[in-house]
Length: 482
Image (cartoon, rainbow, N blue to C red; front, side, top):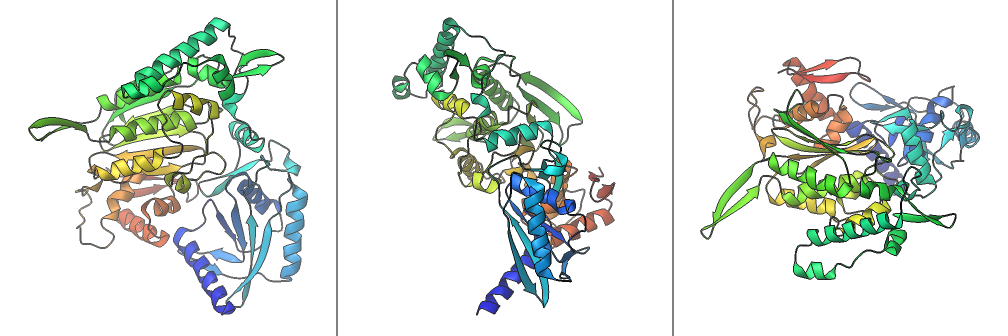
């Protein structure tokens, strides 16, 4: 019975590798390299991220993975890896290392947990140069903003609750902010009942939320105060653009919105509504107008981007409207403990706590964690293709497709609906247009297809000269021939 369970588990492992290949959570190596640093960098990266596995004794072939096993004293190899990880990485990481036998060949699996004492680094390279993270299935050096983000996660602090030294305040300015937020909450109330429930904000509220804090017996503003007043001490903005067609070649309209974050939300929301289609229908002789994308989904996406973006990263939130889709891109990786799958299920990990409290008071946020599931549900109820979530490592992009355009056959390809794999070709082409550097693994994950299916379709598209690969497999990109 135990042997059968092991064989089943091993088969599942190989099937998973063949389906998805190496990704952000799994890395395979044919053998243990003589230079331990080659795999220690990935151990650091996994600990700084969502955890992962490094499997020694599996070789990646062209279209599949093959078990080659390890040669030599595997117990000695295991001890060597354990010692290298313990002595070479700070803070210390304690992985679990397992030996397994598949087809009479021994593989070694290093299970690296997601770490809480971030950032982890290679001691030999130093506290900053030795920090690594996982991006698109590869291990990379962390940049300055990423290291700062990891430091806040490791110390369990919120960036928006940190003192903003460039900002000076007075009793009058504090009261003005309280009054402004109170009137904005009234404005956003949907009924008289909601208005009656709104209570004026006091300085004590701002202190309890973290918008103000105490330092050396003085009340001082935090970064959240700068965000709510639009102070240039913490520059941030939303960039909105309307494009002709399905790429960024031709811009029709472009607007940048800065200032208080609640104003940015309102302006960006109105920009989107101005530039998508409004449908008219009649119900019981009454005219009813409906936007092609649910307005709740649009507003919630913009609010989420403001509430959960990284303000350490000074890039702007980007909202792009194309003929076939709406894209909202937020700077910064997903906060520690959060994944795209958890997010879809309603898991809420707050990055900017003080800002979130304020947005909830202002009626922009209703219930913690329910926004994304409600977005998905509202879009599906309208008959649109489910939204796509991409990234989460350095930024998060959410795509909503407009009016089922995504499902329409691409006549340039000339496939028939009843052809095997044919209906997946437009999906792959569209995702390549959106992100020319998208990997086969990412395509497989987005479309819920196996890696081998993605390879087969890409090979066919390349043979038909519809899709072209430029550059190397690791650093190249895709191009769609128009």
